[in-house]
Amino acid sequence: MNADHPADLVRDVARRRTFAIISHPDAGKTTLTEKLLLFGGAILMAGTVKARKSARHATSDWMEVEKQRGISVTSSVMQFEYDAHTINLLDTPGHQDFSEDTYRVLTAVDAAVMVIDAAKGVEAQTIKLLEVCRLRATPIITFVNKMDREVREPLALLEEIESVLRIDCAPVTWPIGMGKSFRGVFDLRHDRLVRFTPGEERRAEDTELIEGLANPRLDALYPGEMAALRHDVDLIRSASSPFELAEFLAGRQSPVFFGSGINNFGVQEILRALVEWAPPPQSRDGTARMVAPTEAPFTGFVFKIQANMDPRHRDRIAFFRVCSGRYVPAMKVQHQRMGRELKLSNVMTFMANERVQSEDAVAGDIIGIHNHGQLQIGDTLTEGEALQFKGIPYFAPELFRVARPRDPFKAKQLQKGLQQLGEEGAIQVFETAVGNTLLLGAVGQLQFEVVAARLAAEYKVDAIYDDAGIATARWLTYPDEKVRRDFERDRAASLATDVDGNPVYLAPNRFNLQVAMERWPQVGFHATREHGQRVAHAAPA
Ligand code: G4P
Image 1 (tube, rainbow, N blue to C red):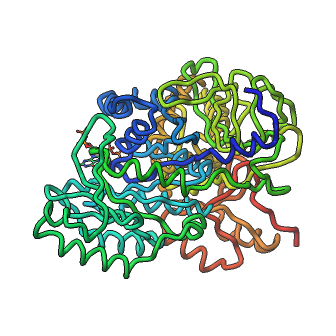
Image 2: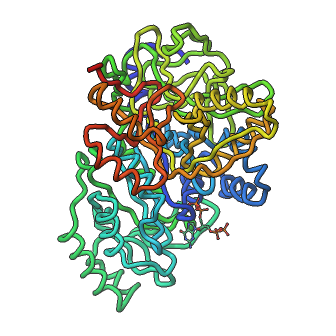
Image 3: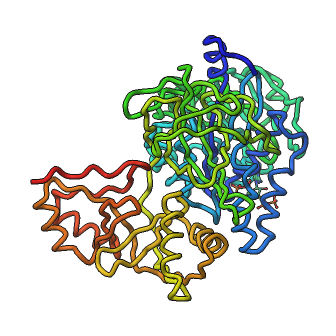
């Protein structure tokens, strides 16, 4: 494409919507993904995404790992057109493959759709993911799913979302009945009833709308139910917050939709909300300055690395979020961390069902850059300016293993492999101060399996992974050298350094961490740290 006029870039950026779906396993993320693609015209028949998911369930653990290493590449990002907008839907790996990638993907989106199972309410993983969204005040659209089942009272659900997730809810639709007597939703903004008709595979073009709450047709259709509905709608209109775009964009209020993904019901409304309300790409903090998405020079950052199909060549795909300018094939960019030029050839765009050579990408788009390890998570590429995009954090791991090679002569190889996988961001690697033991830290179990498989395939090291007896980690900062020395003397057995040499506290349990923090109020204990940046070190005393 040849569109170098500034107005073209402004127009193209304004058309972008980049989002992820967050949910607890089984709430209906896969189903909603599929239905969004269906309504977006990216697939013709439901079943594509789902088939992929069930194939995954049916295969062995090894295949699961294989998938993580490469085969799932195409489903990591799905781009499609809807209503003159280019939508980028980023998959957040969930389920048993919950990993740091799940968190990092959320740093690359401008909005999120939160799926809640109406029978279960707010669940553990949703809480974690929402906390990550909150770090960047990401606007959240809520979809309360499975209304075709016997579920919890909608009001109680809203209260739970508000209190547990600490976000103001603004219902946009209100459900009428549930389970077998689910009739549809009342659209509070347009004052009309959207009638529920079960449907599975294809998109329904014929959703029936009944205008006005006082409409006698409603009494004819649902005699005996209308008094309660009118009462509910009056109540919800007076008791709940009205939707306010500014509050939503600030991440303080979430518009709530009720529906049933499997029945295609309420899906179109989510797409409309994304197009009408979700923000286009915003300015990003490039450390030296804020970078606007409509600036002509090309910039962006790597938020995820995926080892590719052929592990022998250690080739990888770096998932790169464009932050400004326009990607043109074979362009040359400056790799900020390495301080050298990089030619962007063999770059891919991920469509719903396939990957294609990228021809054109602007802010909000995700491109996949083939590389042999030059690109790490958090790396910034620009056309020359010294920038470093912020906001791609490492999260304190919750699972720890000690790795040792089965063959003691492979210790060096193990160390090298772990160092590289740690730098790449596949796993976090710590070295204890006492004994120089290498520890692996992860937020999800599958990360260990992936690392074990990759160490075996790429570094030829068969290792044993023992539980490390550690519950959590914190990055440390000190106000001065004296505090550092005193603390290190007091807590030597709990100290380690991460792959970039930052000091880390390893706690065998939460209580230990709490005690350490209480005893050492001058020491900073941090649950996250930025990729590509060292923790600020204390000035010498
Ligand atoms: P996930 O990706 O969040 O894990 O959820 P997924 O979409 O796979 O949905 C989990 C289960 O919930 C699936 O059932 C799916 O069919 C069902 N589901 C999704 N949306 C709705 C809905 O609106 N209503 C109802 N009643 N069920 C819904 P499953 O039994 O695990 O799989 P399958 O047998 O349907 O393939």
